[in-house]
Each structure stands twice: as C-alpha cells, then as structure tokens.
Amino acid sequence: MLAPTSNASFPNQMRAFLLLLFFSCLLVWISLGCQSDNDTSTAKDPIITEGERLAQQYCSNCHLPVAPDALDKETWHKRVLPAMALKLGLEVWQKTNYYFPPTASIKQTDWIKLQNYYESLAPEKPIKASPSVPLVNDWSIFKLHKPAEIKSEVSTTTMVTFDSASRQIYTSNETSAGLYRWSTDLKPTLVRTLPSPAVQARVLPNGNGAQRALLTCIGTMLAVDQPKGEILELTLARTPESAPVVLASQLPRPIDTTPGDFNKDGLTDYIVCGFGHEAGGLYWLRQRPDHQFEKVIIKEIAGATQVIPGDFNNDGWLDFMALFAHADEGIWLFTNDQKGSFSEQNLLRFPPVYGSTSFQLVDFNKDGKLDILYTCGDNSDYSRILKRFHGVYIFTNQGNFRYKQTWFYPVNGCTKAIAKDFDLDGDLDIASIAFFGDLKNNPAETFIYFEQNKPLAFTPHAVPISSYGRWICMDANDWDHDGDTDIVLGNFSMGFLNEVKFTPTWNGYLPLVVLENTTRK
Image 1 (cartoon, rainbow, N blue to C red):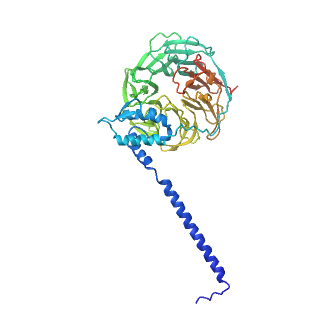
Image 2: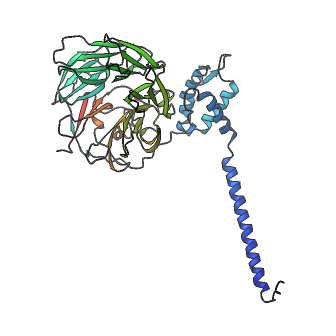
Image 3: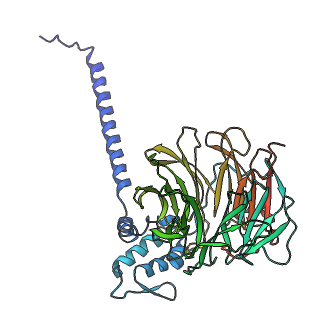
C-alpha cells in the first residue's frame, strides 16, 4: 500500500516534474536539430552529384578523377576541358567550342553537365599552398662551389652524376649533347659527343678497373612522339679508343635505365623507362648469352619515369617498383613470376595533375620497412599553374604493401628529392629541387634542405643559390671523401617558363654548382 503524499511535499514534486519535462524537451530539440544539420550536410547539390558520377564514368577509365578545386576556372575552361574533349572524341574549334560527331564517346547533354561541374565548382584563382613551417633562408651545413662561367653557350644541363671514386663529376647538355668530365677544381673536359643529350649516367667499374658508364640518351627533350632514344655503354678513359656500345635504340624518350639480373642467368639485364609522349613504355633489355640484348615489353604506356629494383617478396628473385607520371600516375610493384615476366600491383595512385617526378625507398622511422619518399611537380602539360599539392611526400610502410601518407611539404613544381643523413645525426634529412617552382615570387624554394630534428619534423632551409641557375637535376654523394654527403645541381637555364610577364635573372652560364657539406669540417 502506497503511503499518502503530504501537502507540503507536493510543490517540490511538481518542480521536479517540470524540470524533468523541460530537460527532456531540450534533449529532443537538440537531437532533432543535430539530425536536421546532418541531413543538410549530406544532401548534395545535383550538379555535384551528377558531375561526380560523370567524372567517374568518363575519366576513371584512364586515371583518377580530378577534383574541381584542383585547378582554377580559367585553366579548366581554356586548357584542360578542351584537351579532355579531344580524348572523348569531340572536335574543338576556337579553343573552347565543341562539336559532337556521331563517333564521340560522350553525349552532348553529359558533356555540358561535366563542363558545368568543373567550371562552376572551380575557384576563380588557384588555391595557394600553406606550408606548416616557413622557409629558413641560410646556408645551413653547405658551402658553395661554382665553376667559371662558360659564355660561349647558355647552360642546358640535362644530367649531373658524381663519380665519387675518382672525385669527378659527369654532365651532359641539350645544346651540344656532349658528355663532360669535371675535375675536382670544376674544370670541364669533353669526353665525347653523344647522339642526343644524356639524362642519366651510371658509372660502373669493370674487371680491369677501368671506368665505364651506362648512359640513357633521351633522343629529344621536346614532348613529341619521336623514338630516337638510345642506351649506350662506353669507357670513361681519358682517351677513349672505341665507339660506344649501343644496347638499345629507337626508344621513346627514355629517362631511366636500371641494371639487374632479372632471370637469374648470371648476366646483367636492364629495365628501361621510355617516358615518351602519347606513346611510351616500360622495357626489359634481356641479355642473351652472346651479350646482345632483346627488348621485352613489360608495359606499353607513356609516362614510365623511374625504377627501383629489389626482392620485395623475399623469394630470391629480383622484382622492381616503377613510377609512372602520365595520365594514370602512381607507383606500381612488378613481381617477378620466375617464368620470364612480371605481375603488377598498384601501391599508390595519384591524379594526373600531380605530375609525379621521383621516388626513393628509405626507412624513415627505423622499423625495418622501406617507406616511400615521393615528389610531384612536373608542370609542362595542360595546366601550367602553381598547384598547392605539388611537393615532397613521405608514405610510411604499414606492411603488406600498404602505405600511408605521414608527411607533406608543399613545393611548387618539385622535381626530385634525395633522402640522406646529411648532418650525420643519425636520422634522414631531405634535399629537394623544383624546376617549376614559383620562380617569380618564391625562387628560394627551387632548392630546399630539410633538416630532420625529430621524427618527421623538418626545418626547411632555403639555401640561397637561386640566382646561380635553375635546377633540373641533382645527385648526392661524398664528392670530397670527407665522410659526409655533398650535392651537385645541374642548371637548365632557358625555356619552360609558365609565369606571365616574368624575366629570369638567374645565371645562364653556370652548367652546375656543388654544395659541399661542411659537417665534417
């Protein structure tokens, strides 16, 4: 039986009831409000929904779709969409008008929707990058060495390579396609004239101790489909007596040649990256017992840029990773099937506006697994604007061929990065160059030394050398044999200018500069 309620306690009970009712209503109101907000945030504009669907349908067959805000309205309207239209079978006249022939692979209504999606959502001006740490303008651990100016020709250096054993440097150029040897006091000697500019050199000792070089000659620096590239092997003796040995010819603008015994027959083979233009490929130069080479096509696609070999699945056979930088950009693993071919697996994929330029496998976090140092910034295609996503990336190895982005520093037009322990403090630092940097407003970013202070925390030193040239190539090695890593930079001083009303002021007559590391001094 319930006890009777006294009149004195009734007001207190009523107040408690009203308070409970108030807070219950408040919770319901908050819940409904939050639900309403969520519904609003997830409801997409029909233009966005339809545009994303069409981009996925028509673009993803060739590459990752590009977000509208990756480029500004003018670049989409005047450069990228017209180029896209041609690939979809449309005819373009007066640059921005379209005709839809019966053979077009997209309907006119879909094209208008796709065009509206990109142009309506793109920003008026390119979105600028916001570096988390500002550049520090100093020399840090480096000291500049430069040769005498060569006034007879403008510097068009295409390759720089340290030969640490002999304390010499080798270069090539576009102007004369010469192969030059530079002494320790930076005086050049012409070794020989090549059939076309060399863009890569590997110095190889042979059995009798004489130096040989494996040269990748591009054929032409122009972005055209002219398969004139060659892979050469030659002696670096001061008075070479024999002509270069041609390992392969008629290649589509090759830019990287990597040695390795990929079929375990005891003979050195080569994987060649034929960057090409619209056509290109990844090739295996397989050495036969008669020491001639057979060209085997691994993948016939433009944009092959760089190869790094290794036994990545620990089966005793040599595999390799390859970077592709045209249309469908990314890094792929090519696993040796032990039967004369390779199976491929994508590891990282990037949109075609990234302009991938280099990668390196290094262990940044000292966990025994190789991480990926990656750069992007090639900016000589359809969208020649500064891009906030160009720069230097670190992708940490998560195991089982999975990689996670753990660090990024924006560098406009980044061309290459090299990770070394430059300051000898036990961790990896990074040196980067940017051929397509912000030459007009921020030329300091064309060479940056990233000093690692704690795990994945870097101080970016803008070493003040932008007035001495425009850096297209870089190598790092112990040039002076003092136990630390030095850097050589190649100057390609003419052409390839994207910025309006900009007149270069850098030195056009220094083929190279050397940054001597003074850590051991």
